[in-house]
Image (cartoon, rainbow, N blue to C red; front, side, top):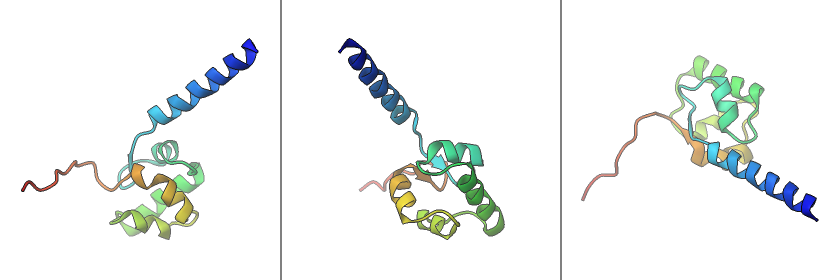
Length: 96
């Protein structure tokens, strides 16, 4: 029983570390390695396809533009939408 508790705690802590280390990535400036580490379901080949598309067609203007990249479909976009940035600048909401 003690062994199972240890295994469970290890797996839980591993999951927490993966979630805690996840950070948004700017797909208009990041290299393929950074993209593949930051986005769920995006390995080295898909990350390279994102960089290649960006180099051939220019910066992504919307997150949905990633659907034009071969291998990036609606499911991958849905899983990662909150972690995809198009610029590094932080903009504030207009003050009323």
